[in-house]
Amino acid sequence: MVPDIGRGSRTHGLLVYLYGPGRREEHTDAHLVGSWDGFAPDPGRDTGLDPDPKITLARLTAALDLRVKQAGDRAPAKHVWHCSVRTAPGDRQLDDEEWNAVAQRIVHATGIAPDGDPDGCRWIAVRHAEDHIHIVTTLVRGDLRNPRLNYDFNKAQAECRRIEKEMGLRRLNAGDGTAAKNPSSAEKFKAERTGRPETSRETLREAVRRAVAGADSEEEFFTRLREAGVRVKLRHAPSGDALGYNVALPGDRNRDGDPVWYPGSKLGPDLSLPKIRLRLTDGAAEPSAPAVAVDRTNWSPPARQRRNAVIIAERSATLLESDEDGQAAGQLVGVGELLDAVAQTSPATTRAELTAAARAFERATRSHVRAERADTRALRSAARGIVQAGGALGRGEDGGTTAMLVSTLVLVALAAARWHSARGHAQQAHASRQAAAHLRTAYRQAAATPMRVLHDQGRALPEAQRRTHEATLRAVLPEKVVRTGGTEARTDALIATLAQAERAGHDAEALLRQAIDMRELDSAEDVNDVLVWRLRRIAKLPAHPGEGARRPQADTRQATTPSSRTSERNATAAAPLGTVQDPNRRSPGR
Image (cartoon, rainbow, N blue to C red; front, top):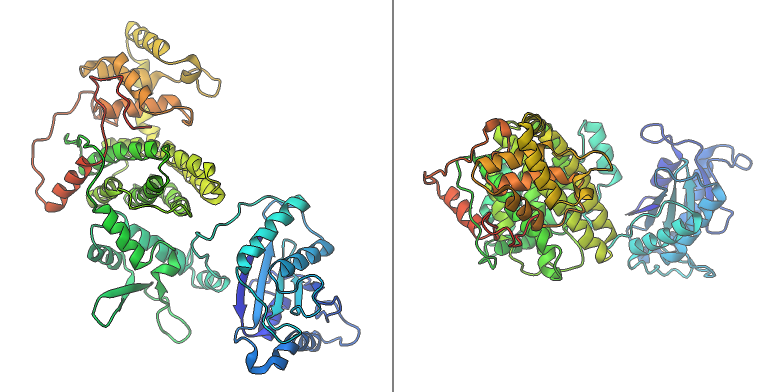
């Protein structure tokens, strides 16, 4: 059950809308289900005294506004409190008596009309659809004082959670005040009217998130915003220093023809200029992590940056399992930036799912656990490298490394879900699981071709070689691990990878033990796939097997741009990378 609260100044205008046909003719059988005294006139069904609904509606408006007129100048400018309450999809249909009980409980819980208080505010509840009601109240009490509405939204949310439990409705997650502001009804209707797939607020929120992902400075952040086609207006202090910023979409104007500006803080609690500056400062801090070997092989820039991001994402998953809450909260912010970077540079085949994953995980980056000045430099460096390397092609090595990275990000999202769940962050845990679901779909899209090639290569191996590697798997992996969902093990790709690693000079069994020891495998949807990508990364095998099975030679060419050198230098400070020669060393990974 979801409450949505707003304020206004036109009682009559709101009632005309509630009793009208709706913007898309969606209102049917509008009528009262409750009121402050149970005797308010109902323009929808009262046909006795005043058969003209317009007259009845005027009488209802006058009754609601009575105390407002009596209070005169002491009445608040926005004296109309409006709360829509909607059941969740799939819930049973409540009858009018049940909706009346819901309305009474909400006006009591918020302090608008407490039970037993004869001076409570006047209110009505209008129903014009099966799944929701609208509560309308005027904010002047019978003693002509204003009601105390501190934390009215939180109180309404808490009461809805109790109502769900008592009425047997779907139990929704409680909010904690850290979510970004949802688009208003007016913004949604405007988007529909203008043919936009989403509201300006949502489009701008994503544009700002993407612009800050891996940005090295405030100047670069604003440059990225403008390059994305967003209008930017800075607010300056008398000293000339920027205090904040506003953004607008080209062509999005109000009724006066002026651009519709949104302050960064209204797009998201973490998107104000001070919060972005803090993130940029944290990202530039001296790293506290041990150094990691940068992958300098001759992959394409997108492939190389994605391989390096895998190492850094694996370390973040490990940190999310530690007891350092402040550090873990900081990692979540960095993972959000990494997801934004991957989404905006992903090929068309995976872009929709990766974008959905980034949007879902955005909710998981904020909670009441304060992100201490954690070292997010490695994650921000990985995001920056991916953005600067440009979009992957979605085929060949680029497509394979995308699958490799997305496979790792699935387990990072699941680690985030466990971290939030352990701390009672229901909404953030749900958002993390949603992100993981989208990432799994994106993984299947990205991995389809390379995994099919690997399966074919595994089946084509000589029988003696297959038996050797099957024996290795049986010796190292428990039977329940190599089986997937109770079906026969799908180990062809894994066997092909072990064979290629052995041809490249590795000890196949030692390499497999190292891959297993990196992180737990219980949360993996397909253990074989997880191990394939771990093995191919640590053995430096091509992510796309069609690119050849030999280990590529190191690229001795020097980067030619300062940004490239900075990206590699930052990645070097990220996280420890295990070596094949030390299979018992526990490396941070999936």
